[in-house]
Length: 452
Image (cartoon, rainbow, N blue to C red; front, side, top):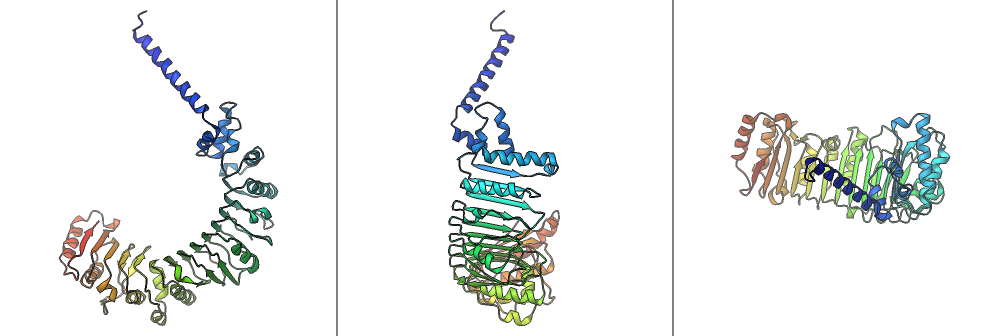
């Protein structure tokens, strides 16, 4: 048969393709263990275990993976699959020998396996874990994490979620812990909770996500290196406690919740950015909101929600006591329409002499029919250079606000107006509003208006 025939060409191509594939496999198998383990680290732990059937070389390769992630899925709730899950975690830790664990993630129901789960956490600590992520669903309050966890020298990141009492030992010290996230934790009492926060000398980021404060009367969060503090407090709880925050290095603060607790800052001068979302208009919430805003008067950037200003507007006398924001250069709103007739908002404008940037991302509205700018804030005449308005509908009230802002800002350089998605398809009306606003007399001749 002619060697140049189509049949021979086809066979040659198949052999060449097979040779290339084998060559690729050999190259992969000849890679150092550390490289193969790095490749496995991009797989889920279950998929990594499945590679053990590839060859003898791969049989125990997964055991030394730097990251171990075990997440109990819905299909593993029955006894058979639950046992498989438990055996997988047990095997991964028993076979690990001396190699360290960089990250250990565990998400599962505790059920009657508290001893096993405790031994897994203990094993992760013994293998010098650096990132520990525990999400435990408990059916009894007797579960206690191992004492060794709370004196772990290697751990740098700890994420802990479990909706029961966090039973803490008498000795707590995390010499390397930089990031701590506590979610749905029930703080047990003042003393042990205080030991927890005091036992993190190099902590830089702390997140308290919908934790339970009912057992706490007063607590201080004291961490000399703390740079970021985030508190989500949206639970419908009856807690009423005082939280004092010592943060010589604190730069960033976020609060979102019903503000039933009283938050105070010692040495708040270091704060640069704050984001506040207060949910509620009761007198207690309004009182705490005003106190909190005073604590944040030194920030350079402040992000708020309209709901927060509703709390600040709750009592007329509160508005008169709003603080001076001497360093504030950026004020931003999100999550809803901002009432430009708000007395608290006008007071903040008046009290912010350095305000250079204003963002109204959720849109604007007016609750007063005869609204006008009675007193032009000083920053409008000397500092305010950028205004961004989102979710714009082109109503008469919105056009009035934009026209008033354009006429009363002497150094404004840019106004950006983003049309609402609800307004799509109404090009003619958009053009009419655009043309009208572009011809409005402006206080700043250098102001450029753009629409998007």
